[in-house]
Image 1 (cartoon, rainbow, N blue to C red):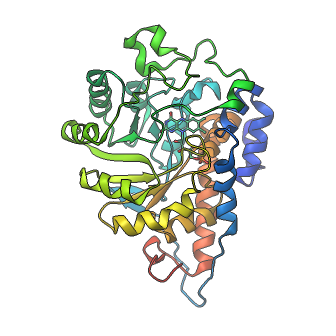
Image 2: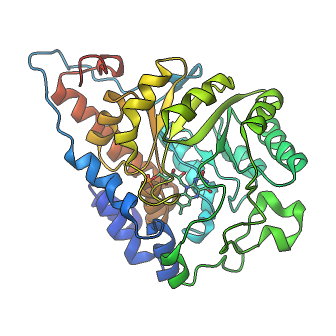
Image 3: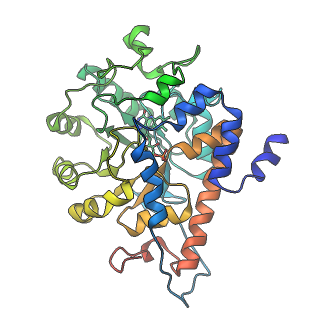
Length: 358
Ligand SMILES: Cc1cc2nc3c(=O)[nH]c(=O)nc-3n(C[C@H](O)[C@H](O)[C@H](O)COP(=O)(O)O)c2cc1C
């Protein structure tokens, strides 16, 4: 099979990125690549990982390396999840359904975006392991509650409230590429709001499909109505992490939205240690933004994360080969993590210590 041969010849996530850029049209590849404004944070997400160094220990028995993680009572093949990314039909006709299938193939949890191009019901029907659902709080809080309930009823294990984008930033790369929702791509979860909102362009400061007046009171309210695990995504400031824990969330996601929120904020790997110290093991900390190598996953865990999410890399896999591409990206990254653990002298995730540094 041509596709099969092709992905077997892709050895790194960077190989997938290059292959995806050859396949995608200009608008799609620019939308995926884009950071915000001058893309300082987008570059810094990579630069910060590349500045870090590992210091291995020798003569440890690493004959049985094990990347399995139990999180919220469920076993994950590795501490890596698939981040919420909107409009995946732009990258592949099967969109999110193929990504979920890639998750099935690799025992990886898929987090659906509010702005997915398939409904949360359709996505959960495909998911062999419970998906998570990312929520952008809507101006209509009743509709927000409806979205959360739809996710829970469909079998989602967790709700992630994305908090880092109350307004839009200057997405000049997208504007230059003429980004728009192509025919056949919609915000399927928002269908009931009518096509004007479901297809609203969001190019101004405010957008009709993400509320700008969300406060901690809303988070408390969401906690009171949300019967599954609740996480806040987009935390960088330790003070916000503490505040979120005080609102009784089950986890936090340290993220700068892959460099797409506010430009010039720190790389997440640099923000993570202070957040981890402030949270001090009260809830699990997940992190994303810039993870491309097994050594990056290792550094995240060594700096206080329980697990990580990847965004763009699995969309590259999706663009190149659908579900099989997503699964291959996961296989590459998990294998690199295993190799890193072995070479570091740490056979189990619990051996990766934040106390002793690495
Ligand atoms: C094209 C694209 C669309 C995204 N859409 C969403 C979204 O709808 N909701 C959300 O919470 N995060 C969204 N994100 C952010 C991702 O969830 C994640 O934080 C980020 O991609 C991680 O960085 P990475 O791409 O460097 O791995 C999006 C990211 C990209 C690249």
